[in-house]
Image (tube, rainbow, N blue to C red):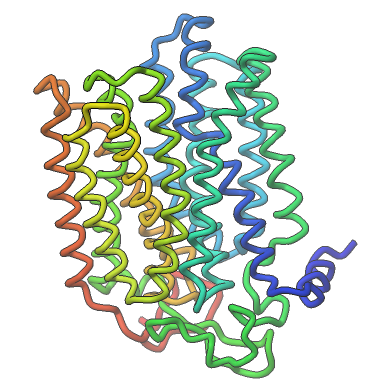
Length: 444
């Protein structure tokens, strides 16, 4: 079977816009990446520590180590996505993630666990994160917000279901075999959609973003995009190269904004359960509040995605930041079960926007030409913010013996992020650039 021609025929004869099939395929990848999620590791923490005699700090350190490695892997992933296409990178990522997940139960020493789970964390945060957001933003322009919202909701569903599935496996076959079957699930869910359905961009199958036949629709909301140069399938995709984009204050501001808000995100996500326990909330309710946070993020992702289509994207981003800042302060009012669920769900609702808007604003501002490479530049800021947030909130607790000083700081960071993005101008149209296959190229 000639796969490219096969996918071309599917795309041309699908009774609906083929971008929705792309979104389904990308959604399968973000769903299964939760095999390497911190919440999934959390359900293995107790049985592995008991069986192996390892400390929980040792086990949790694998996620931190993988997150740091992902900061360096993100720019490489972005370059590879632009060079070889999201399909090739996502297929490779899913194959490796499935194998490393299965292998954890076979080869279990501290070093091997850090290598295998660390690779999973790199895949979670770099190629799948960047690749799925890139391909969805290639296929959608006018409906980019809601498409990325649905993509983020797929992640949120996986964030809720994958740990639950892992716990069932642990209860049924034990933690070693649970890792094996979790890896099989990664392959079973993601490989077929990525292989048979994924196409890197609509021009590869003679189509236009959003299913529009008018080349004028290739313009992004900020003026970047592709102009027709011949029939459909023969268009020049314009936009910023990474090298030129890095000269704009806009890209650096977007990176810093993301770092500040993911500091807020990680501080709450990682320490929420412990904070609720300190407030007298039962362990069961504290754990269930994490599920309500995931549910809130699934709903919020779609809501904020639609908002990003209705108003200028930087206003949507600022609104997300301010919403998260207000809810962060609301954690100080939590003293019973009802408030625990309300505040956790509201924070998840804001987090849903944080999972969507960064992808949209990068694509809207810098176009589709080198989208993977530009995303690869932004993602390390996210990883840095997450690492600093987890550590910073923990240090404040260790010094003061209380989390309560954390939340006003998070509100201040959120306000700073909102102001930063509001006062950052759009980069406008890209300068004339060398039309070659190097996403770093520029007319220097």
